[in-house]
Structures are given as C-alpha cells and as structure tokens.
Image (cartoon, rainbow, N blue to C red; front, side, top):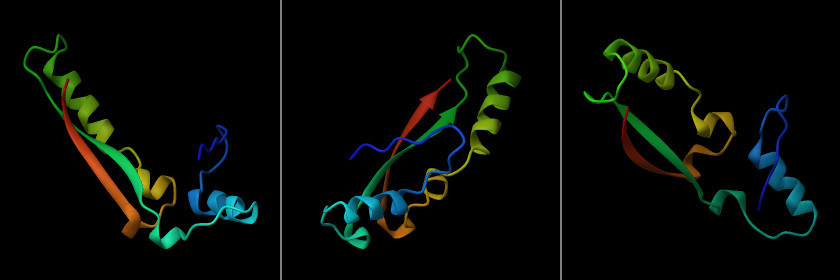
Length: 87
C-alpha cells in the first residue's frame, strides 16, 4: 500500500487504512505490523564540520517528532530497525 499525504495534511495511517478496508481490502489493524527505521547519530572526529555543528545537528535531530506518533500508528504494532550514523 502506498499512501500519499500533502504538505498541509496530518498523516493518519489507521484512518487511511480504514478507507482501504471500505474499498474491499481485508486486514485487521491490530494484527498488522508497521516497520520503521530509527537512526542514532554520532559525531565523527573527521566529519569535516566543526564539533559544535555536529552536536547542534544531533541535538536538533533528537527533537524531531517520533514517527509512531507522527503517523498515528498503534504503538504495540511497530517494529523499529535502527542503525548508527556517524556524521
């Protein structure tokens, strides 16, 4: 399933999937798994940027909205796959 949301729209995955169900798709939202990625940013000594810029970027990235909350996905149905990224 590919869902497209516009810039001013608030993504709501369960509501969008409910529309799919009305179109004849058969599934149970509470047995559906959602796969999300998570990045852990680490400052690299040879990144080419000053250390303070690395730390500022990492700090700002940590304040970003959580994807589970942003897309309004049931928290018990999420599988997160993470990776460490050196910047």
